[in-house]
Image (tube, rainbow, N blue to C red):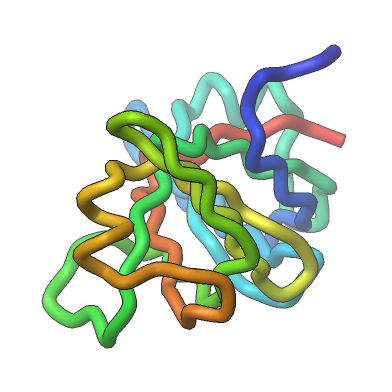
Length: 139
């Protein structure tokens, strides 16, 4: 199956915490970082997820935010440090490629944000992704 989602990060499930309707699934990405996905309990069962399961974390580029400095007092759990490797500017939106340990992320942000943050090749950034915006694919 082909997907239009640019950000597909391979990893391994390390823990699952079930709730009434939703579960949090903790992953160790192949690059060593840890992230959390919040998915339905039904999806956990349908995907056959358990500790040790191989998965791909899927994140739309529009759901990746970027920060250039320390981020405190924020509920977003998934924070991946990286370096900007490319910026493509459009009319209102831009795509920013970020090298992270073990892979690459693409963020779709406004041109104003690129300008305000002073993003360019070599800029240090932290990619921020809400756990509710991480989908999982088994295998």
